[in-house]
Length: 103
Image (tube, rainbow, N blue to C red):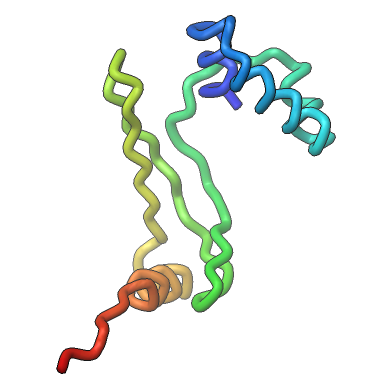
């Protein structure tokens, strides 16, 4: 939410951005409520549940590393060590790797 709000400040004339906000506001009451609140803050860390099709729900910590004015972000997801979530996280990583058979 905060990244989107900052983007509207940087690109006030963007029709694509305005259209996205309209679509999200119309399609989600939660988004509409948060957007109406007007908060602008930097997203740095959070706790999330990721739903992976093979591993199931995984509780992760989500940290955002920002490259200043370049608007580049690195999102780092980690699971608590020695937990079921860590095991599911590792399963999710390997289940996404596809090695085609070699002739």
